Length: 389
Ligand code: PLP
Image (cartoon, rainbow, N blue to C red; front, side):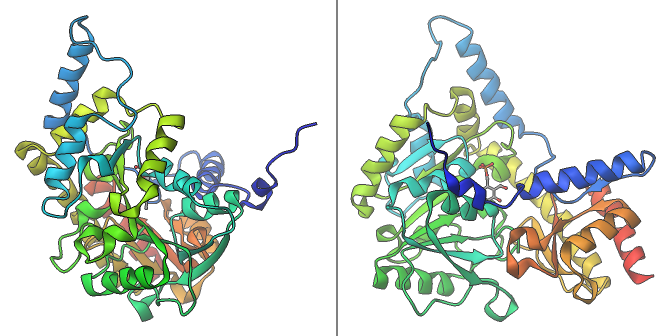
């Protein structure tokens, strides 16, 4: 008789966005005529950059011809992309192509990286947080210590007095929209070096950073190559949420971890598609860079509208200036799922309840700046009008 992984029973009943989808579907069934404006899920809406589309078309044409057809690629990614990443994202930071592992995105890699570590490590996770880190560590049977993030620490957490073995940091942050300053990130790196901890740094939203005091990569911080793994993704940088491509950097300075991740990926991952990788490579061309920046500026424009509206509504928003997410308080500290339900009922606007991201999210909500401008304007108009009533 087989036995099952009992840890599954410890996960919350439903993944946050499945719960939201179920509640929205129920509302739509009860009010088929009502307009629904989705400001909840962090999925992109703008089309791919033309430079990316052209590169992917060329890649398809290559695969249509016997002489240039591509089958299985290298599990760790094509050299052309690993080299482009090092030359552009990590210029001058001492990262080598062999430190870079191409993947199908940051969710899989942040979810699987725990396989490199022994079960039972004490894992520090900021709260509120992208739920994947928590679920993946519950499944692994690790002990979790939550690190509260709020206004008192600029949403970047207090450095713990005890030692955590593994530390997840994500900046710009989902859900709070906070970015981290160089001096604070240096403190986290110093802490990791002093305690023999490893930092798992999720930089999926780095392309939204506009403030020069905010580092795009943890490797801009002295000492980080000896204590940090970094995750990146083309999902939000270049609209690849459906195309799928990202990468993880495991510097050789981390000793056995580089070879272990190479082995793990070789064993369980068969590579991101050639077409996606050619698309990702095109992000680094001058036209690609200009075009993806334009799209990100568009989302940042939405974020600024959202932030202003929430401010007018008295909900004290933060984030949205170096990030596509705006984090705000519910009116009078209302329970965040209750706010979600009433807001949907009264305005048709779907927000993300803060409690879905952890205890510290109670009494908060997240609004996403992905989506069309007109939609952001309409949704915020409805929200402000309703709250002011
Ligand atoms: N990391 C964070 C913090 C995210 O918010 C997301 C997606 O929303 C991901 C990773 C997943 O990105 P990908 O599409 O590359 O799997």
